Length: 239
Length: 240
Image 1 (cartoon, chains in turn purple, orange):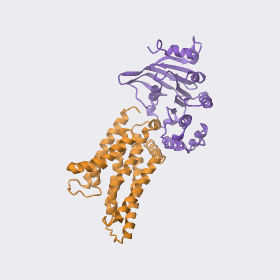
Image 2: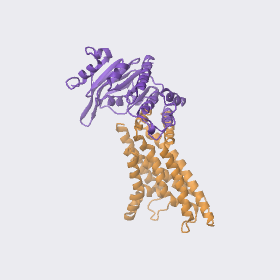
Image 3: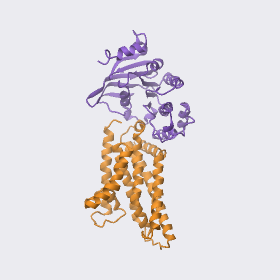
Image 4: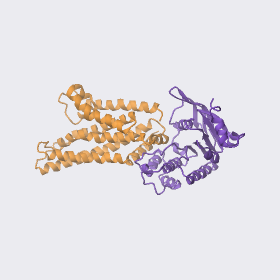
């Protein structure tokens, strides 16, 4: 039942620019892994390759032992959330989750369950275009949870959430990892990652500059913030 | 594979149902069929036969199925929905296959309903003018018109997949059918190889008799296959 997410020597080029260089890390079951880095460091690009949206120029990104694109009913294995709601603004939240459920043979009752779970139970019939940023984020989480997946891959999950929402997601992700699930999340917000992650992968200029249990990565620095700037700053890290 | 495709198709049907603009395209097409057939049949200088009346309305109805086809794919590229689609169905061939089947199901229902109510409206309008209605056998030209309408919308879907946007795909497909085609028709006889004119032979006779309904259908299908293959190739190669 364990599910490992592994990224191995990933290289990605956009034009002549190399945006990922030999990115390697693992997200282990039972743990929350935080992918931390400044904006433009390559966090989203890495997750998009892991989720089969973009192609790597070299290297592999695997869910257990196969690429995401090879998964059948992927929502039942990996629940994911990228930036934005991922739903056309003229649909209702319920229609969005319903088509997603049908595409993966997920029972339709799950739609109401996840809407309740993320606190959108009363907004199922509302068009996504009328949602606030925080509600879009909650809808994205509902979509990630729909297939009761063992792994969650979340790009900047706390963006746009209010303090109560941030606390709620922290409890949710902790619970998922404690139940044996795998959680991989990206963030540029150090405090959030500090409070939620067990393992840390620090990425800067498309390279992994530090990885390991959070205490090891921050050892020798007073705070995660100090570690972060020392690792990702212009004089350190990426080269 | 077949089960995965079936699931993806059901998802695409659900997606279209949840898109208000797609429902507007469906009911707009049916409404336009009623309005145009009614107006043509009520006019004293118009055709005096329900089938002929409805066939005159068909060129206008192309805008309806083209809109439906463009919306089915073009809306994926707003609000990041294409990412959700590919996260649900990572197979880059299953997605276009499911979209095509779902579109054809919706287009078939729309076109059959539009042509049926168009015929009914024409019949009633002609009856109020006391025009005797002659029916001679099964109106195969109406079936041809239905096939043409569904396929011209599929061309819109293919353009939307290639251009990845609703507006530019609508502009390209509608201007090809409603502007470029009539203009070129006045200039060169080769305009008969344009998709709408070739497909039009399924319900209108070609005075020049260069293309038959069968070869006209093949030319239209050729357009769909060429644009569609280019779109699928790009879809498989591009990052989402």
